[in-house]
Length: 192
Image 1: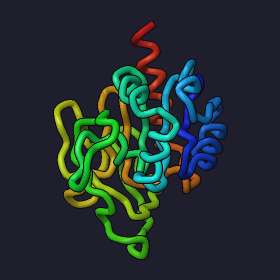
Image 2: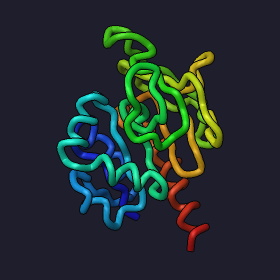
Image 3: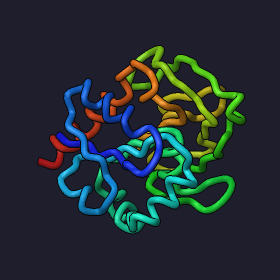
């Protein structure tokens, strides 16, 4: 198995290290050719506007939108914003997950926090680092909420994709990455 990590900005190295600890090969994706042969793609946390500009600069937007129909994707923090079909402010980016996301929903940088979450299917007390984090205000058809803080959905999935509001790659807790890996494996087993 090879999982790509969008390598234009953000916590790329941290995701790569996490996947290597789980025994998964990685590919840093900076061009459409880098998408060949990967089994899944991670959109790391970072600054979503900057990541989008770099996606455009590298000519990746159209190919990523096409890939969103068949390639499992996991968005963390800014990655969640990129995968959303709708944002409360501004235009959406990839539209891979039918959900409405609010950027910086928990406040500014100074309002960042860490907590533990129970994530359905992935485990109890999963470490979560929220930095200028978004949350999901509304989910569309086929989207399951796996974890929430109050009424704010912070981990969601579809049959194909996974997204979270926080940075699991900044912790030592590997369970959300492992959940994504298992999601890919289940999909691969079904399609064989």
